[in-house]
Amino acid sequence: MSARSRVPVGTRLHRFLFEAERQYPQATGELSALLSQLGLAGKRIARLLSGAGLADQLGPSGAVNPQGEEQQKIDALANEIFLEAFSYGQMVPTVVTEEMELPARLPENETAGKYILFVDPLDGSSNLDVDGAVGSVFSIRRMMGKGPVLSQVDLLARVSQEQVVAGYFVYGPSTMLVYTAGPRAGVHGFTLDPGIGEFLLSHPDIRIPRRGRTWSANDGNLATWDEGPRRYVEALRRVDPARGRPYSLRYSGALVSDVHRILLKGGVFLYPSGTEMPGGKLRLLYEAAPLAAVVESAGGAATDGRRRILDVFPDANHQRTAFFAGSRDDVEELEAFLSGHAE
Ligand code: AHM
Ligand code: MG
Image (cartoon, rainbow, N blue to C red; front, side, top):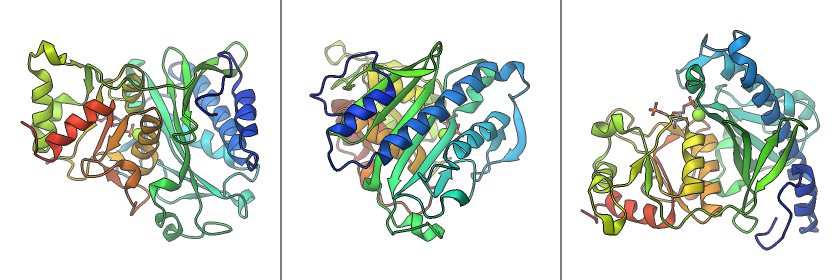
């Protein structure tokens, strides 16, 4: 949907997608079908989360994910929900998920479509122990070749620009879906009305403020970070009313929820690399890249410290990256520290 079009607040997601599609005569409807199905997965996860504490679905599953992190029972359940949602319907032949080392092949869809889904089914799941907000992140990427994806190599040959739709669900006091289909189409937010089980347009054409007064990062790790981000944060802490400093610190430990705040209120999110995590912690293809697309389409910026996240050439499905994203002016200032040009 273009930034200029006017679809009223309260419009159902399906209707919104239909209107958006009408603006592109060449549209085949595939992306709309994918987004609808993502909406279904998001609704099922929201429902799962609301009762998880009563159904013994919280706590560790006993397994570890491909990154060697302890998997929560709820991570595995959310992963199943995404796989089930796409296991039929000829939408994607393959799903790459944080919870599985190899891409999940969907046999019913072997010859389907031209897209692949990358997903972090439940981001920040350890927040659930304290009833905190969590999220899901998704990225729909164009396939390079024709036909099914046969190997890991087919997936790796893609640049981030082949991400055509990206977004997230945030499961907080309400459940929201936020997505972008590129800068021209903008960023739109939908809130789940649980009474009717529909996502309704609540935040049309989101624009991130040009500058904020908040930073978001795991301050406890600051001593282990690379020098540039450390010095930037030290600058944000100084009292300098003319520049709106000190900035406030807000960090929940769930990426989606932290970036969602920055998107709506402005400021900057940081997860730098450092001595403990030389390559960064967050995953490029299903965490940083989709969130970078949302932030950039809303008028902000996202970088790994050396280049735009959206310009990175991936080498592996589960590769990690340093990640900085937020308001354009704040990220510009941060970049001066990252490149050693600011004090
Ligand atoms: P997850 O996908 O395994 O849940 O891990 C990613 C999470 C992000 O949500 C969050 O930004 C980050 O890890 C928090 O890390 P830390 O505990 O180091 O602050
Ligand atoms: Mg995650």
